[in-house]
Image 1 (tube, helix red, strand yellow):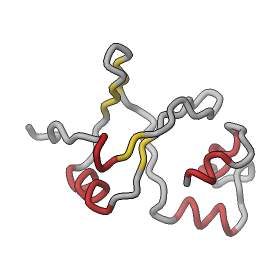
Image 2 (cartoon, rainbow, N blue to C red):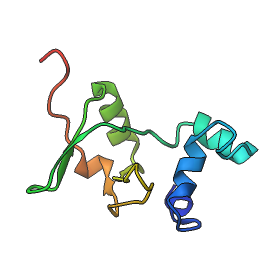
Image 3 (tube, rainbow, N blue to C red):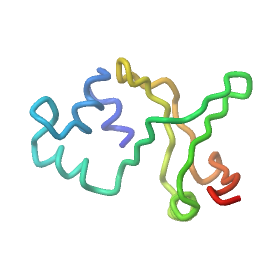
Length: 103
């Protein structure tokens, strides 16, 4: 993913991978990328600039699975121009489960 994120340097690259319509990457590589398990996207989250902390809702199982398997990084991208804003944080050490929906 890191290599893919840097390929071409343009924010449109990421958008084209996720778009499955006529404006997106319709190649077999693009389909494999979208339909595989190599990328998870959250488009709604809260970001606290004072602590540089992002928070979002997802399942406890998702957090556990990503932390245990290792190799996952979390990035923040702007969705207005599809440019990466952060260098990424390792999920294993940088993502913390705080609480679930029913707590």
